[in-house]
Image (tube, rainbow, N blue to C red; front, side, top):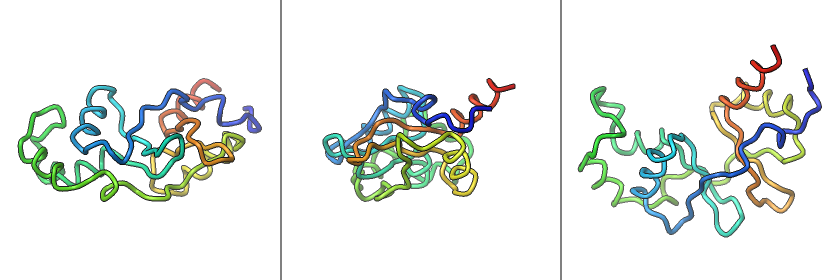
Length: 144
């Protein structure tokens, strides 16, 4: 296994993002449309936070009702989303990794923390990509 490979070899570099001016409804639409679970929040090219599908589910009480599906058009969720901003719900100052971090280093971080995605940033804290636990598993499977 190539332990010294940079994370940039396996990260997603065409990242779907939101900014502080987007609404939670718009973020929810992006989660649905692109079948993703994490949205970096940017201001210009700078990373300012991270929003997850789980954050929205918790906010709208989806987890309390097993019959709810994010594909449903739920008026309750829409009403709740309108009460908050992305900035109020996102994780500010998320854990990040550098484009120069190795795959091994990032795997160690993901194994130790509760997150399932890490934004990959340049030295100027500009968003360069995102790496998820799914990306890591796919990489490891390719090694076998």
